Image 1: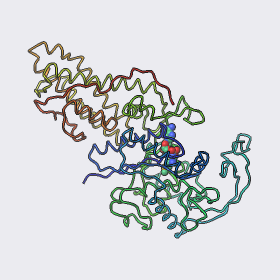
Image 2 (image 1 turned 60 degrees about the vertical axis):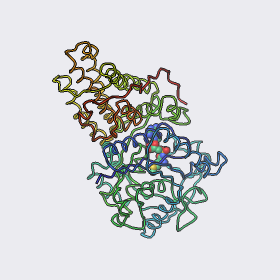
Image 3 (image 1 turned 90 degrees about the vertical axis):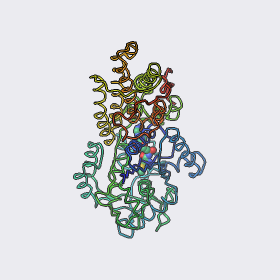
Length: 527
Ligand code: MSP
């Protein structure tokens, strides 16, 4: 039985259009999912959109349209972009779907019945303009609430609270014993510090008078669900097999759900604390999930622009749609995977670097290798490979290096370090290009005594290119297919095919076609 791998991303807010941060996270999860499929695992990749909440309600009001229409318009932009970027997901989580609403409502009803939710009245500073309660974090350096909040008044409000704090010791214990729960480890340490300071419960409702665009409480129609409590549930409400909130243990859940769960959830650093690391873990624990049934969180860093956060107000938002139009989806996918380290640190987005890396690594190194391999085989051997036994140190080194590269590549992919995995694949291309220079096949072709050596060189190059195509396939699915077409390989791209020597004696290569034409234009600038 193949292993099952359930991978999810955060679901994106639909109060605007997708930006480069959203695109990065989807490509990252897509690459991991494709890698697992390449390995032969059964994969279910869930992504989607977060459609409720105050921001959507306010933006829809400003736009003079209903929230339904507003989220439909924005959701369409996300769907179109994922298609353009070749994001191959299996499930689509949209939080306005009845299936999701029912799941959230059943969870609320169950927690309420079990005494894990209670109603209480609390007072605080409320911004009438922003329609939200303010905390001390919102105070300026002078201790006052700034003009952006408009009129601030003291208000008492009744709400429902989820008993969060009672699970603090459990969560600390879990973080201490489970090393794999949060990747990278330094994020686990940050989370642990935050949990140690946890006090108070979580307000999970909003009075309808203040927020109507949300999931109604099943036992109190005066309230809707707080958007995080709603959104986090997507990972189970849209899980393969379907989660049934009325059943308290996992053993009672549908068997398909049990096969896929727990999920691997890919999120940005900003939504680890408190949303995923505290609320979500505790919600699951409260629902009866056991410690080894907790999801694994993969936390990535952020893309910044000239050292600053990307934001609409700074006018520095990078539009992935335009970049894909200018440079192609695969160039963008490659850049996003190669230029940030998935050990969780932030990176600097630069269109110049996108162009430089594409030209150096894809056009010059990999593209050129493919091109010259096929062209030389066509010119000197009418495209037919011969598998001959020739002893030659440089050729032996190349063949010997492949298993090492493949195993380091897989280690990196399993650890979500796509940048490191790509470096392995590109290192192989680099070694092949050096081999071409040192062996100079054009000289060998002139010397009849070197016939076998020339055949061996051409075979080694073609075989290495075949393996590189498999390794880059998760990031560059179209290019990988293109390489296979040019090599005239009918086999499916699969990690099980990376062992050396699969191209047969007498194999006829296809025709060369530039796969990564150089980008000659200057950066168009962000839009
Ligand atoms: N809707 C919530 C998530 C709910 S999950 C149950 C949300 N949405 S978001 O649209 O603001 O962000 C979606 C994802 O994009 C988050 O994981 C976030 O970290 C990521 N990114 C947003 N900006 C980013 C960058 N500039 N760089 C990289 N990723 C970033 O939060």
